[in-house]
Amino acid sequence: VQLQASGGGLVQAGGSLRLSCVTSRRTFSNYVMGWFRQAPEKEREFVAAIMWDDGLRNYADSVKGRFTISRADAKNTVYLQMNSLKPEDTAVYYCAARARGWGADAPNEYDYWGQGTQVTVSS
Image (cartoon, rainbow, N blue to C red):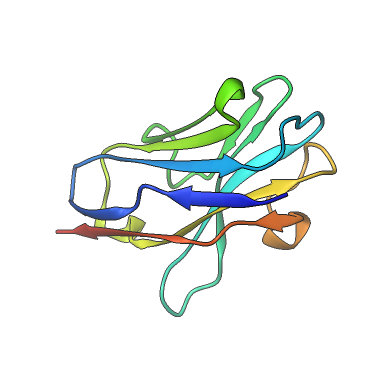
């Protein structure tokens, strides 16, 4: 499974960005698609996840109400809509896929990773 993330950039605080993750696989039954981020000198952390089959979602507390994860089946794409961005959201954002179903948000529980896309939020 190959994942290609894009959509990062520089935005002012309060602004919005939408990240995209295009996948090489056509069917994702029982897969979970996730977004993680890693700021300089910090560990990679969970941001959001979506179950491909039924759309079940989970978010980190720090982004609830501001970020929305979604998927477009026909485009084999997962999105992360980020609104009301804050400087502390600055990080490299990664998309990932887990083939073992729902129930984990640790990076080592995910099986496939895309390259990162930089998000920088200025104050």
